[in-house]
Image (cartoon, rainbow, N blue to C red; front, side):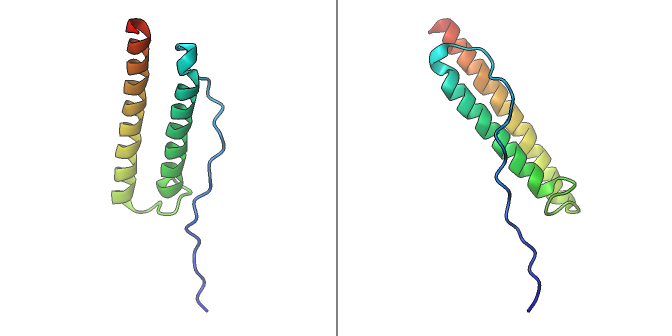
Length: 89
């Protein structure tokens, strides 16, 4: 039988990053959103990072880096929207 390489991605640990202060009713939502951002970032790193599944695939690495940048921008926009709604709401 041929040896098959595992392509199972590990489930990331919960990050220990603090949640930015916003209205108390929004804190659980912010924490959940931040957790999901960290999970997606971790999965992207597992796919194309130096110890990832495809570390030599330049096209995939470029795509993953672009996705990470978009994810960072999305998180910033989400925080700004929550901050603006807390000020105006």
